Length: 221
Image (cartoon, rainbow, N blue to C red; front, top):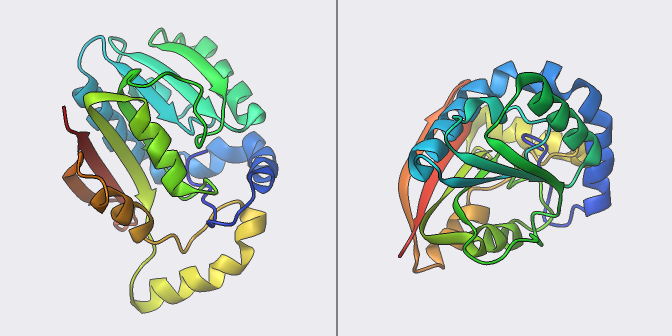
């Protein structure tokens, strides 16, 4: 999935159609510009999980994050798009990514995992993709163990200036693109503020041009 965001009313079948369009060329367009954020998110996830830790990658897409995660963790990836996952499975086989134990077609808003199954949930460039961000966050939180960590890497809409105007104008093409350029921080910030067991322990803006934000959110034990 990575940077293919969606509005709150963006239907899931529209997202799947968009992913089908992007899957064959996704790596060519979305690899290098988003690599600094991916690397930072993967490093944060690995540090939080520790050796032998279980990491869930929500919206794993073509698997660009997978080689960035160390071999001493156990990685499960999910995505709504079967074409994206086919590319991810090819990457796992080609690069012999032994840390990856499974890749599954699954809705981020209805995870088919038991409670407290993972040490870390990593959501790279995906929270603005899903139709219902709060539902996806609830599910990510549910499958996290006590003292687990949620890592969110995402673009958030500018609050002022030229970038705000450009993002608002781009919003008219969101349905075709499959992503929502005008995604507000409040969609995640309000969810965090409403959870007494959630605490932001890191928030940093990353290149290119500080367009992306990494959030590390710890779950109380």
